[in-house]
Image (tube, rainbow, N blue to C red; front, side, top):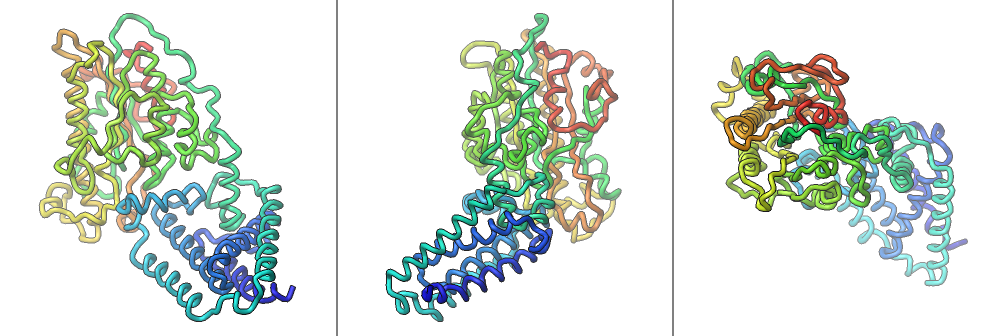
Length: 528
């Protein structure tokens, strides 16, 4: 017991400080007295467990306590960075992004900021100084047997607290901000971890679970579905933006079978959420906790999806994403879904870049090549090409506007503070040109060829871009993106399309991204 007294000051100080540091989070958690008992058990138990783990190699209780508080401070800073950019707190499923930040620093570190990086560095250096230079190891004050007994007592107590807390694990709403507010950060992490561990994606009633029904002898169309990075119509932000920045998008909407605004489950990032909703047709309620990073589950288990459905219907299925295939576990998920081929960053080179990433022009060329090249097997199968572009991916503030951009994109000279918007418009114009080239390619495949095949182009944005300064100046967008589904049918080519919407409503309607693949299957020229 006397030995434990050497640990108590550091433990009590560290635990108390951990509750105070939590109050720096966004949103700020409720006071300790207003949280469930299980949340407090998980917080205290986890802190004691981590204290025991750090204490074992360093043998300095104050050093261990300060190191834990420094790491907690880092989590607070990361939480602020995410909340400021994406309007969502840091959740348990985000921990894998620490390794992603090392492998893909450009996607993450610029949003963390220099100030936060310096604060985190100072915290850890300070902890090292306090621990190594100002504190003597416990082995100089305690016999090894007493030290081991005390360490085991702390470890056992932490295990009992965590076990009891998990036994009555707090109920969560899957609204991260609300759950963090109610539970505090540590219990919040545990609750989301437990929910992911003990639940599965509910694909009951999936549109893609049934066998495809083929009707008639008409050729099945080539289908190109483009998830365009950060694509939305920004012209509502400012009347100073020239209309022709999206001239081809505007034109094709007049010919489209469907078009309108798209409800997406992401803001600024988390592309995989929108991507999964499109490919599986599942709502957030069906995904449960897996809505936050569904590919963590889908890398291990297959569920009905659009790709497998089209493959059963006779399609060759190809995905193009000009980024490393391992990102978001796509190299594991996409073969399970049914893609025959995955063209990732290795299919492109530095000359294909436009800004920071592979440009839409190069991606559009690759799609055109695939549509124009006969299958090596000699079979005349239709193609389903799913494209995830990268050109418009942030951080936009790492690029500079070009001298001619003001004249190209604005009615009047734009303020220097809107550099992110100018860079965004330059890339958005390239996306608009990609729309034009894909429509022309599909039309050429359908018209004037002896063995012509109709085509269908689905285009949508995964989320709005991160442009915090621009939104502060002009106001935040509503978070909706834009979509259209265009076909090379007689109606579309004659510019007198039959306009339809979800449940046969008028075109220009607002739908959820989970409904988009269903609309593709409703196009009357698709005999499945």
